[in-house]
Length: 222
Image (tube, rainbow, N blue to C red):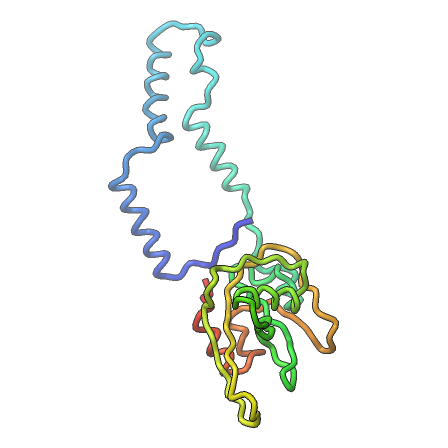
């Protein structure tokens, strides 16, 4: 299945411009050249006597016939709606929603109180930042969820200042990008944990403002 976002006005104008330019400047395609070949074959058939059973061109479809068949297929084609059952039911745990938008996985985790954030874990000594990110995904979303991490360097970070902690002044959180490959989310056996697949525009309904402002810098909605 292929699903694209609706074209903007400037995209439609650009598409029309490119189409006109291709018509004016492009060479004839193989299909267009068949028109001239069909005309030659038809002229030969009218002027000469030949046996149609021995003529290999008699069994091929003409360009006009091909055009008619393809136009019939095009008229019969009905594109599916972008609005799915998951959209109608507002099922935020389903990937079958917002088909023309990028969905981002967020989990509910406890930091003094519950917050919606990207899957997160503490860094263990001796492991790389990417290894921590991979472990965070498994520990927070289960081993059946498959994802491809993009690169070994973080795509962004944020930092916190501890106001009432004498042992630590603060902490940094590094973010890695990963693309969904398959599988289902399986939450850890902790109370009140949860997950959602939401769009960038839906961040404001669930994520805290400072956190939302940070991750919006490196999450592109395209």
